[in-house]
Length: 382
Length: 240
Image 1: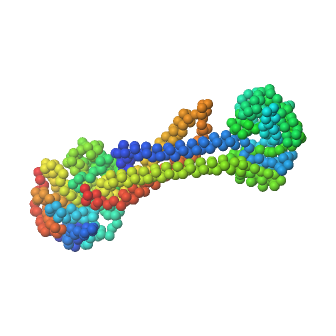
Image 2: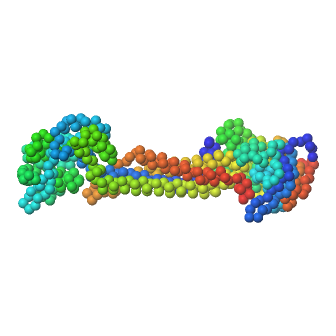
Image 3: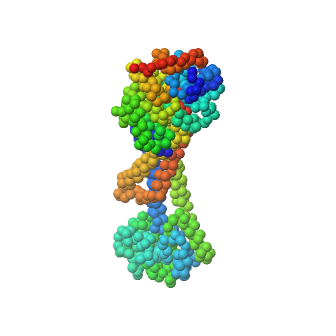
């Protein structure tokens, strides 16, 4: 072990440039794998955050749109692991009536203290204030633009039963999701109850979960806990296309990483095989003076491992640097980040570990070649 | 020959054929015993089979037929690792092309046989011994120099020091001065002779130079794969 390691180190150091190129080659391959992995994770995070981050991951409703026992349900649902937020809403569909045109909207009554946790309305308010009661409402930036309604303007909300209610726009928000910005009209729970004719019952309970991709499983657990009297939906069933896009992205990311690692494996194996030929005289003479086959093989296992170790460490640094450069220089026209950086360190370490494993494995081929080399081949061929 | 002396290596009815597209027989029915403490030379023209004979004596190559014995032990059926251990403990090699490891210093090259034996765990005693041998071959000033940074003669001296490191029973040298000038060659043979006389180390030297062979105790001449003469030189003095 000690001798083989010492010889491997000397072989590496003797051919400094060759070793450096091998290490850089491994590092470039691994940096691409790491960069792609972080980029895809960040893209997905950004996409999910943008699409469903502020939306409920799981929604509990009833056939008649009435939930009277919110507190009991909250206790039951709260026992399911992975739930991060529970909040009831009072929703009602209708039309925003203007002189020229009617716009389909959703009147959403929320407890703003709690809703802030989910929607971050405080920070996403672009103008005005949060509704505090009465006829105050808050509309999305896009709805404000299309309807030309601004702070202080009156809007009319018409329900299917013909009831019309007038509200005053006191705030404008931007939740960064066009469909929400175009249709949701926020108001207090009390105003929503008064407008929709409910008294203290909710239309839905919205939940957010820790593991967004496990929302379907969590939904099933909730369903079995609260019974079939309730409808439990999750974002995955409502966003099949998005989900399939994300999954496709993940699969393609894994494919790229696997092929990059295969190319790293082949490169190391072939370069080290050439090294065996380059060092055949040394191996031959060492065998002539007593080095056993196993120990001669170990020299190349160690070479693979050492080169792989340096290449991996450098590759991780390169990969992170590349991503940092991407985040720094790739900006949206308004100067924002194209992707929100999300570095899953466990994935980075896993990728590094796999790369190191692959590099060590690459030593098998030259090691076998060294094992087969006989001293007489070297001596006879000079 | 003094029959009371023990044999370090012995060949019995040994023959060697290289197998390829066409089988090439190179050695035929060789009987040879090398006595402990003797200084032997194998001479013959290029292609006569003398190097193959040396390689088989050194267990680097295997005979096609016949037996090879090292210190009375039959080695024909030993596997590669057992042969490697046997060579490490009983043999030293000096080749025409030196075959030092250029990645290591003179001292490290000399230490290799013991380093292989002890898996790299060199003791101070081993280092002292190596330094003594290096002094014997006249390279004390080069111990920490990389082995590819010294002259051909110095490289060959390093190879000789390496061959001596494990106090082998026998040193096998294949055209050890083939690449060296005549003065350096002389000094190398003088060194061989001195080691033989002082330490009783057995030598088999393959050479095509009759003048060198004349300074050994025994001259074995090979032609067309057969030993055609086996002459004992009495009272040979080491060259001055």
